[in-house]
Amino acid sequence: MSRISYRDALREALREALLSDPRVFLMGEDVGRYGGTYAVSKGLLAEFGPERIRDTPLSELGFTGAGIGAALGGMRPIVEVMTVNFSLLALDQIVNTAALYRHMSGGQFSVPIVIRMATGAGRQVAAQHSHSFEGWYAGIPGLKVVAPATVEDARGMLAPALADPDPVLIFEHAALYNMEGELPDAVADAGGIDIHSARIRREGKDVAIITYGGSLHKALQAAQTLAAEGIAAEVLDLRTLRPLDDATVMASVAKCHRAVIVDEGWRSVSLASEIMARIVEQVFYALDAPIARVCAAEVPIPYAKHMEDAALPQAGRIVDAVRQMMS
Image 1 (cartoon, rainbow, N blue to C red):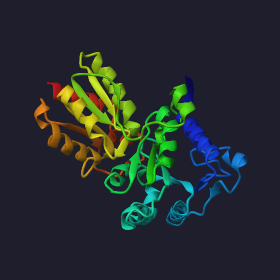
Image 2: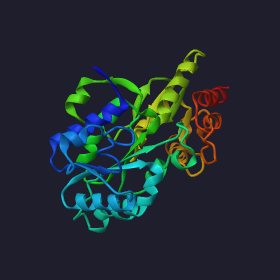
Image 3: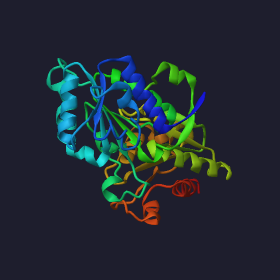
């Protein structure tokens, strides 16, 4: 067991991938000489050279398309998009090309590309850089969408993503890069973990708090507060947003008989909405109370710190939602 930051766990995963497979290369804006916008790729250019660590022009449409072409040609590209809002400039490549090639070719071609991007708010970077669009991408057949919320997942999700024949999008919450945590030796040694299953991060019996990414740690904080009040909250980390692990979600809800969904995306037409619908479809009669959602306010995320905090899901809002449900 070693202590490591989320950022360093991601870098270790990249380095291991580059060492283990000559087909792997990293490309994106500022990933080389600058060391990455969030310093994730710092030092990799010196170790692997400009053929493996490729700085690109400021054209997400262009370099994402180049990555797709490389994947079709047998390479294993890792494309870094600086922030999730910039991925909209590559939306046609991701949604109309990468996601569809296996289907439209009748299985003759696959696009084994990994696209990493920073997501989420909470850092005062204002409305244009504070989006949580992972729920959008989770609605696209042909893509796999994962959201590592721990250093273990940050370290272990890349290897199985690269091994997958289909495009995998990895959403790294930007507020987590400085977070430190314990990395089990088994994960570091094996270099990979399961990317198809949700995971219970805290056992409970009274209410299931379902979340992912940057909101996981707020949910755990809320569960600790609720425990002092005699409420045993179970915290479920979705980890993979497409395909959703329905079995683990439904088992948790059926056990606890209540559910609160925490999603940093906007409430309307959200990932939280989809999870709520699936719970109603599959385990409605296990519920003892209506499902609650704690989501971002329906506004562009403000710059001012106090307004940004008010717009986002916070531990206090999660606690209030559970208290109201239990009463």
